Length: 357
Image 1 (cartoon, helix red, strand yellow):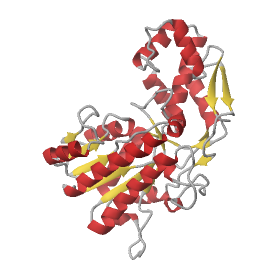
Image 2: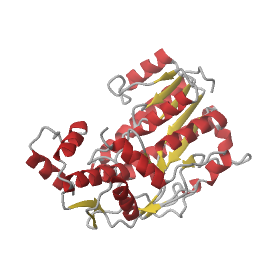
Image 3: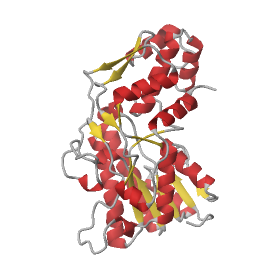
Image 4: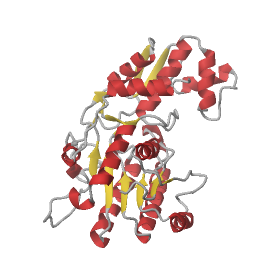
C-alpha cells in the first residue's frame, strides 16, 4: 500500500477499527477515510454505494460489525445475523463494483465448531456444530469470509479474511449487558471495588461516562445500587457468569491491528493456500497469541490489577459457552508476524486506561 493511497476503515471508532486507524497513522498512511454510524448507516445499501461513488477508496478494512458478549449474542440473535450480513454484503459488494485493490474482512474465532480440535487450525471450519449461544453471529462471519473467498476465486479480487481471537484494549465496549467477557469483568470488578471502599463519587462518575439502562450518575444512589445488584455487583461481592473453568485466549487490540496492517502490506490472497490446490478453501488467517488463561484466573488477574480484595463468585447456573478456544497461529507466524504483549501486561494497561483520569 502506498502511504498516500486512500484507505477506508469501516468501523473506525470501535475497538478493532480505531486500533487499525491508529496503526496506519503511526506507519505514515495519510489518506484515511472513516464515517461514524450517524454519518453513514452501513445497512443502507444506497448510502453505502453513494459513499463509495464519492470517496473511491483503493483499500478497505471491513472492521465494522454488530458485536457483543455471550448474553447479548444469545438474546439478540436476529440482530446479530441480520445486521452483520447486511454490513458485509454492502461493503464487499461496493468494493467489487468500485474495483478496490485489496480488502480485509475481520471475522472472529467463534466461526469454529464448539468441539473443534484444540488448538484450532483454519481447517477446523465447518467440521462440526457451532456453539449455540453465538451461532447467528458466527454464521454471519462465516458468510463474510466465504464471500471474500468466492469473489477471489470467481472474479480474481484480492480480499483477505482474518479471524482474530478475543480482543481487548482501548475503546472497548464496557456495556454491562452487551460487552465481551474481559471488559465486562473489568467494569464489574472495578465497580465492586469502589462500592467496597464506599467511593460513591467514583461509582457516579463511572455511570455518568457509561450509563446503564438509561441510569447515569445523577440517579439516586439507591437506584444505582439496585441496578448494579441486578448485574451481580454489590459492596459484598461480584458475581460472574459460569463456572470460571473455560479457557480463553486474548489478544491486545493494537497488536491485532499491527497484524492486520502487516498482512495487507505483505500478503495477498494467493499466499493463503498451497499452489496447485484444486479445492481452494479455508484461506482465512487466525490472528491470536496461541496462549490461554482460565476465566477464573483472568478474574483474579483483573482483581489484582484493580486492587480489589472482595469476594468473586461464579454463577454456575449461567452458561459457560465453549470450554476451550485456542487458536493455532502457525499460519500467521509463517507469514511473518507474532504478538509481543502478554495477558498480564495487557490487563494492567487496560485497567489503567479504563480508570477515570
